[in-house]
Every structure is written in C-alpha cells, then in structure tokens.
Length: 71
Image (tube, rainbow, N blue to C red):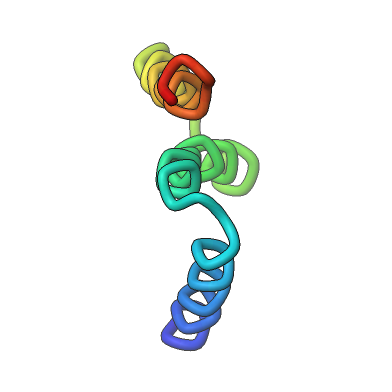
C-alpha cells in the first residue's frame, strides 16, 4: 500500500507541474465516479438514486469550473 501511495504521489506531482492547478484540482473530484464504477464492477455493489445524483452534481461542478464562464 505504501508503494502504491508513493507511485500515486509521484504521478500527482508530475500532473500538477504540467497543468493549470485549478483545472487539476477540479478534475480530481471525478475520483468519486471511478470509485463508484469500481464498486459496481468489482464488488457487485448497487448504485442508489442518491449516488447517481451526487455524481451528477460533482460532474456539473467540474464542467462549470472548467468552462469559459468561470474564467
């Protein structure tokens, strides 16, 4: 686990060095989508209505945060 966290930290540093920090942090919130997807695909979990609504709200925020309107 420590090795994986170290690899994640190195990759994260490379990403934020080469990109706009506001865009990177806004898109980092999409991990919730990938976590839910993995939970369904790997562990057979079920998505509730509130899970889907929450993910939609997060993606709406990411889209608005990265749009020209926010700049």
